[in-house]
Image (cartoon, rainbow, N blue to C red; front, side, top):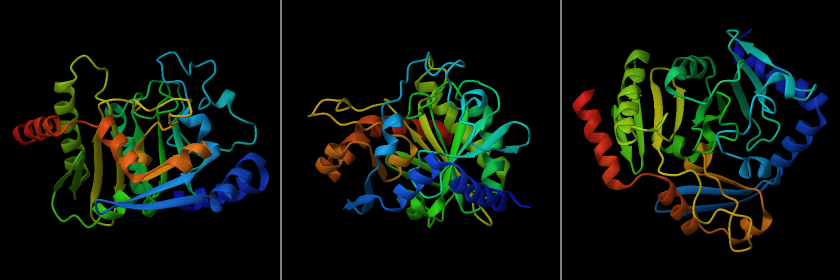
Length: 299
């Protein structure tokens, strides 16, 4: 049985047997959305109250710890089933979904969120999950469990940016502030990713990891990796006040879909605000040029 088929059977069982998951996935099917076109790009805002926990997650280095981490098996609901992958990753349906297919793929060990040591399993999983895009949120770039290594996966076609860049026909495309790698060989895609990682690291020498969101998927003939360097975790407008917004952008938001947990925020949202937040939490044009120059000189 292939992995996609196993996952479809997992969804069927979980939505029949786990009330929390059934209620939240049903809600996603009837979600209220607003669609904008801003500077030629699609932006989708969705009113999604079940994402409140993620939007308000503690993001300091002490939380969540191994004693209360919701990705550790001993702290998960008894109803939550798992597909084991190579004895190192657990594949589970996300009980607080953004889309009608939303997976969490977490390491079996409680270890810090990091991309460079785990790019191999990310690419291997992407190859075994055709039709899905895997994404990684750095510990200070939207990860709600910054101390537990994990990826997420959603259907490729639900993310506007992925639909847009699939038509790129060159090895490297640069959209402010995204870098899109396309390579036919896995080894080359991985090598190019690591050069970008080194370039970002040169600008953040004291950081454990350059702040970033990363997406990866595999088509029939090509590997695609999108790197989104970040300048900060949350925008200056973040907060609980009436004049603030509970918006904590991660990979999904950066690629065009904004799940909004508070109805008051959803009612006030505008495309210009979302664009302003995107610009605030990503790197400057000058920083982008520095990373690109490093890549060209070292690839």
